[in-house]
Image (tube, rainbow, N blue to C red; front, side):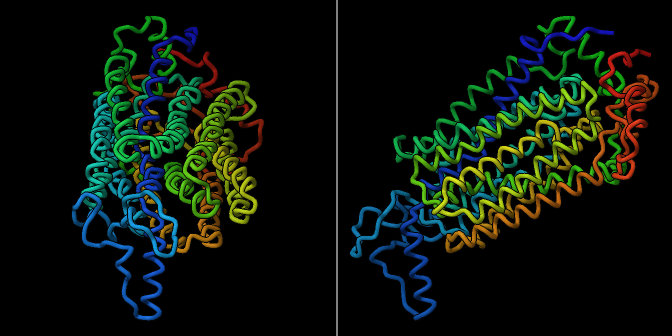
Length: 546
């Protein structure tokens, strides 16, 4: 039996830290527009325009051009936004409060801007998994985030030029982003020993939450104090960070232990031995991807459907928290930035806690891998659904309660990352984790562009009642996802995911032994205990070489 090499100071821990920074960069580039748009948009002009439109509809009146210039943008350009530009230097005859934003983009246009990234994101998830499984995740992830970084640096110029140009730019940013998550799953399938899988992957996932934690307050500060009008400095600062990360990634990260020039012999042997029977050591021996088996597997569809439901809630939070805090709770910019980031501080902490807890209950055999996934995923979806219903009834009069419930709801979704849904691809098909996650993430991108559009239509008047409908829809989708996962999820190494029998002995290493369907998962505990003793990966003594 190979002795475990301590995680601290190891090459796999270095990879975990770089993956953490990769996801921090990844999500900061994704959510920057969510808060920046609060500063970019002239909300006074939009409110005035909406009133003018309503008046025109009711009384066949024409727009009052004393407040609105529809012919030119702030820099003399034409069509830089969807509706026109508001003259922020002009005094209003009725004393109307004016805000500093340059762009007059109505709710529908803002929804299109939010969603445009996901139109591109949906196209490349599957390609990301395939390319990483074939060529390794290092270059796929590095080049994808480099591309997204360079495109982000162009946002200020393009946004001032043309709103359609901004949507196109965000579309191609999404194309770059689509490669990252599936490629990361593939990379970890080469590096993460089964007993450390939850911890290592959760460090990586926690980067996405830290990206949100840092992005919201920093963008709030840069909006007010940054150069070139404030909001452009958001995108320039993130561009500099992204370029710095890319250099470090190229120097410190490698596709597998076998390709790492500085890894210790003991750590390499430990990782490769722990993955025997799960991963083939030769990519050339993998053969064709079993597409039909993957697409007809109920366990894969459990991941896909639940991932879609999870992302609807997450994207609703991700793209609209700053807007909700402004429209309903009426927070000013600095407070908005701080409070928008607060839920993700606890989300980040929850991922770390839940990943540690998931490894403990599996190592101590308190729960099988399958039951761990189901319990943690239920916590990560059902409880947030309940909190969302509470948020929908707590308005400005109870803003502290609303913020508390919102924070609790978002934080608890971290259980999906630490021990639930997002670890399932590695359970059922480590060799094809990138492909399975790529398929799942492709389908789960649909809420990315549907959710902002739906919210734009549902919250036209920016009232608490309209936002209540948004939260009820998200809660219902969460509940459905939780039920579906409990019915059809698996933690069993699927037959189509076994290494070739002439390559390695595949009968001794399966991530878990529970069956796909709920009725089989509910068999008596004595039977499950017996199966765990025979094939559970937590038993290191089951490792043998052919």
